[in-house]
Image (cartoon, rainbow, N blue to C red; front, side, top):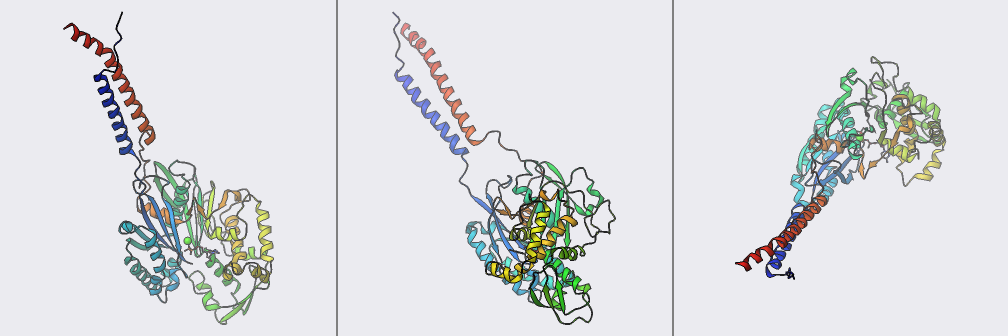
Length: 492
Ligand SMILES: Nc1ccn([C@@H]2O[C@H](COP(=O)(O)OP(=O)(O)OP(=O)(O)O)[C@@H](O)[C@H]2O)c(=O)n1
Ligand SMILES: [Ca+2]
């Protein structure tokens, strides 16, 4: 009878133990070496010096993945108290000191050991563009004051400058599409509509259209391996505060002491002075000669008359291109979904009109009702929660927004539902700041980044399975070789 050889000879036990130790060691090394490191973050700070106010944004992203997409998020924002930096033209130092509180907040938000490497940018928009036109020396002084504050901060200060309207529009578009993860995936992009206090931007990709008809409106990008031909335009003096000035200027051309304004509520009556109404380059050439020092601004609450006033501020006839939006500015056919943010959102959200699935006619009817609401009633309903200045202007602003979108940009009643009024996307505010930082830190690569063929978990599992298979193979091999070896020994 064939004697069965026991498998647990000292040698096989030693080999098994060594094998098991080797496998455990191999898998441990694979796991440890390739384990995702505990998340460490990097930070970037952008100050948005808008015409009406300044806001500071802190962005963060995983330290190891600067180049990866959709990973930069807004960590914190801080609203600077007071008005925009351009309002400090007469006392520039205050433009610098106004930023100190938010800079302190940023020092607490960003871990101290990251301070020195955290880039800090300030970008100014239409308010400073207007100040530069009006008084270039004053604009320089405001920048000097602002720089002084920012240079003193512990962050890696990268400079303060005025963005061009084109940059403001294009970076707003980058932000929206980056946050929506549309760029990396090469999906159809979303257009961006930004309404500020002093300027407004429209940016979108219009396929099959020759944007070279107006090269100054075109921006080309290569992002993640895709080419984009972006149409963008910034209308200076068409932000909602400057348009309000234009509307009032339009109604005070004869220098009256009393103006009955259909865009303000019945019962609204406020004294305004001519000097501060006409203090901007958007209206300064319209100032009536020999006007009194002030006028009484009286509300009438008539939406359709307000629409007429607002419409009269646009020039719809001048156009030297194949097609125009208004004021002789080229615009290709609207395409794709649009995100409308900043003041578009503030105003439409207050008015409860962000739902664009309602027919445009219904939106207009609701706004007409709102405009006809007596001023006293509105104050009772909202004061304490909403600033009086904002409250007084929502009828005008809503009318302006609808007129700009429908008559200005040509969002017809069918296309109106393509617009989504948004404040933020996945927790990050919509606006130009994120796109600006991504661009300056080269965080969006022109080509799609190479990613490892296997995810970490897949890699570890495969290494483990292969190691176990090899080990089993080794045991089987030893089991078939060993008896022969030992028999040979016996023969010898
Ligand atoms: N809750 C709020 C906040 C702001 N506003 C208004 O929204 C406009 C400001 O929009 P914003 O996007 O902050 O403009 P800026 O960036 O300051 O201006 P710009 O981009 O033109 O430089 C101002 O008219 C302000 O009165 C509003 O109506 N309701
Ligand atoms: Ca703005």
